[in-house]
Length: 155
Length: 204
Length: 221
Image (cartoon, rainbow over all chains, first blue to last red):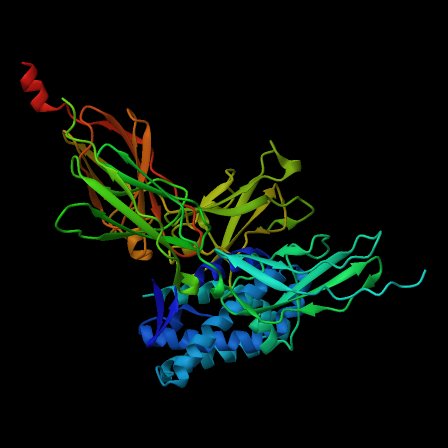
């Protein structure tokens, strides 16, 4: 099978199939609500000269952040927008990936690198500068960037 | 008129084969009335992060048959719960839920239906289209008294004729296959071996 | 002098059309102004940056498309395009595209397919489609470099037996041995990338006849 590689941990590449399909169906709706086009949270320079391990660690931190800070607060809005089914697909697949990686982390199979932590903090700072509803919409509208970064982590 | 006691639909369970998931329950019967049902689901994300919110099923918000195709609702390899209630006019029963949570990695995988054919010396295989999750691991070999070197190829999707091997004139080739569902990290058993003989030298 | 933003109707269906990262902004003229001598002006924005930028070659143009390939060359960035109608001193409001992600949305063009017939074989050489080039002298960037999982789905149709089958390949040369001689085969190739669903255009059908069987020719003589 084909997996993507998080440090010493493997996640089935096929999981991205469900993620892309779900995101493609909400992309227009969510991105159209983001009028702050002068702010990009997941910036390209986070990946510039980043090692595979760094990309993986950053993805891990972002997945965790999305579950605890983005999806959880956007549930009602997703219902209003009529995108609850694809939204819960994204959330549950993020949960499945994180659960697998959590196990690896607990077994000490990968540790978060300092530079990926710094980049993650940059992301968090940019995120908290925005007003609550704007940042949730923007973060959700940038899931294609996160999925593209996960594609890069595919072995 | 006096409200009828509407029991919660009993015997809720999921039957899953080849990543098609059907939720069934025993019907609630009220003489002379048509009872409808409403289905909702939640994944592990909803249970852990959102204090157990429930999500209306894609296709079964008000149906009259005691079953629901929940394939489009189960789109992650996590444990799902379902609940169903009976509805009669303005009255609703209480919810009944699954006794055991359902994870799609428990789906029954049957061996794939396969057709082998040839175009001259070319061995061709075709599988039924089983949906986006399915790939096919094809094992094939040339029959010969002494050795039987097995080769294998992954066929990405069903529904089209795929070239497997260029055969030697007059030789017999045998094929067997299993499905692979990477997203649940499982595969089916192999199907029945099928063999075909390549044509002899091209007639002059 | 800047135009007066009045009630002129905006352009409609403003989208990017993209093949191998050649990214063209296109639109339709608004209902009420069809046939009139209006002109259009285009701007673009790199998502995450503050200012909308002008495209000088697409200022006051009367066609309804504008090639922004140069400006949207970095396929890891995302972009917006916008266009407005100008009629005399008056102009409409801007009409914007959705956010455009070239990496996700570009259609992958077909490879270049070269066929060489043998007596009972056909050799196929594929040249990966290339990313749009800023200028001819620049080195080519193959779409294979952008999409490392790029593969090819080769279809071959035996017109005599009327059988068509497919072969998935990753390398750029392949041979179909053991074919029938003096037979017309038609071949078409489509690029395929794992991951998000992407549009991909198949190459035009190319038909070629395998050579006559020399041995039988000699025997007949």
